[in-house]
Image (tube, rainbow, N blue to C red; front, side, top):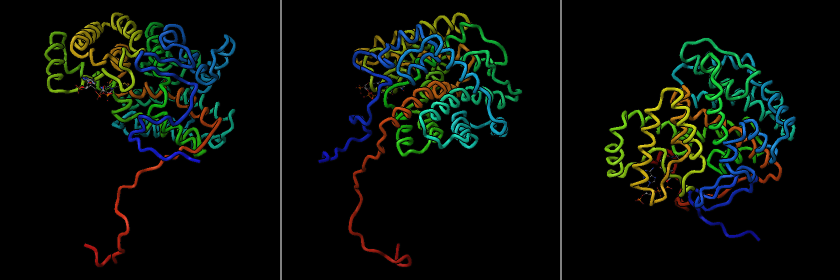
Length: 380
Ligand code: ACO
């Protein structure tokens, strides 16, 4: 017997999948990937190690990690037609529109696109994860009229991205700052884009279609776009002296402060703690101390005014400062989120296929019934 359907707008109270990828306790401020606390991962794991964890649901040995790194690096480069496609992109295109379109095109050039075996899906996951940084960095070069920089397989994913973006080797500290941001954004339960990816793969479509769906879903300002908004706000505030009047003004008008609050976390977002330390270090190293000081001042005012409501900085607040300090343009911030989240999306798709059932909820019909047919000439 099937249970009576329940109307749950936004699905906020619906458990639609079982997962072993990540666990969230919003009241206590806990996030774990496969049972490992996010803070421990951010302090100790590389992004590639985190990818292995999400895909295999255990930490790699040294040999296994080296093998995964080797196979990711071997896939950094793009098919010639995809390089050409980036060359032909309008320079004004939003990077998320561009990324969604080019990731979709990768499927056209992959003979394995429709092979849904475990092995083929793993290879395609590696390809998308490895190629996304090449696509984003080189689109940024293209729109700025700079020549492409080919990926460098001697570098890890974060350092390789920065080298393509900037045309020169970044310091280890800067590469590690990006690496930490990638670890922190890799997975987060059944959020909207992960759900969208699982819906697509549950039809037995293909991994490229699922990740294209997910990128389109992440693009929305209610989901992945908040870190851009944080940077806009910091630019608008402009100086530390303006923090107090700006924040108090917004709060008195009941406007939201970007980078604060979370639907799930009512305690300090566990991803924000270590990132704050990192943002401080990297801001100091790159001469962006003013930005960091402005951020901590905002946090102080917010703590005084609204912490009692369970509103604390979320992951986007200090990732904005970090991305800016390492020289990533504001409109690439959501692409950075996508590059990282490809690991979680692909992990969830492969998990979905292990025990697949088509995801197909129902809608409550609220329109009219029993209408009389009217010939087209008689309609008004
Ligand atoms: N600034 C000021 N007040 C806030 C904020 C904020 N950022 N967030 C919530 N509040 C207040 C609300 O005004 C409300 O106050 P009231 O009870 O006096 O009316 C109370 O806190 C509860 O707000 P809700 O809307 O019920 O909280 P909800 O859980 O729906 O909101 C959300 C979560 C959407 C993330 C919200 O906090 C927000 O808009 N934050 C700013 C945008 C942002 O940073 N988003 C990124 C989230 S993290 C991520 O997606 C990776």
